[in-house]
Length: 250
Picture 1 (spheres, rainbow, N blue to C red):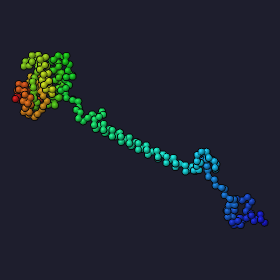
Picture 2: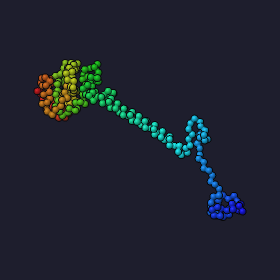
Picture 3: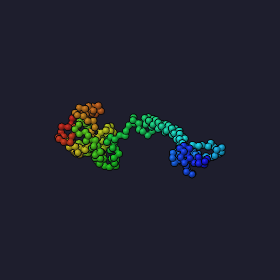
Picture 4: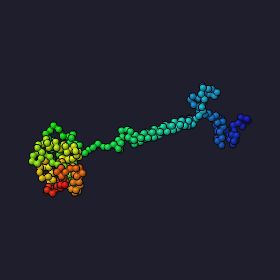
């Protein structure tokens, strides 16, 4: 009778089959649930054992948080160091660029001269015949002279060999060089290439690039330089028309 009583469900009283795990009538479990065990790390030892370091019982999902805290602690000093280096580089660049200590050119330092008047001295062969030297100088001064077309400019002299000129081309070259020394900005014009400005070809006119709309400023410049009417006059530079009305004397 005791065995028969034990073969019935304690919850609903239905008969139990031999070896049944749960009641067919009400579904009540007949066996006690298995004991729950937590997973251990590979290097975790049994209870009470030590290896010189603390045994940790974290689950795998909980073990990721400590390394994140260490990474954050290292990133902040690195960012601060980068910011400091950028600021120092900016300050040094400002100091060296502003004061002209480094290779940066100072604002007050003059730029190299590009005036066409300095070109003939280095582009003319001093061993060439005097006439060839004068022709070469006039070719080099042509570009600067074209910017004076239509204006009045002071004219210092005309050099050249032959009637109304110098005894020979060497003397003409020497006289031009003296004028050029006194007035470095002077230009040399081949009168044959300016038929509307000069009546007589085969000569070289020495002019000064101080343009004006009338002849008066050019003549005033002659007076300021202490040049007489035989040494300085006003010339209206033209490329077309009659050359007889483009000259004015003091």
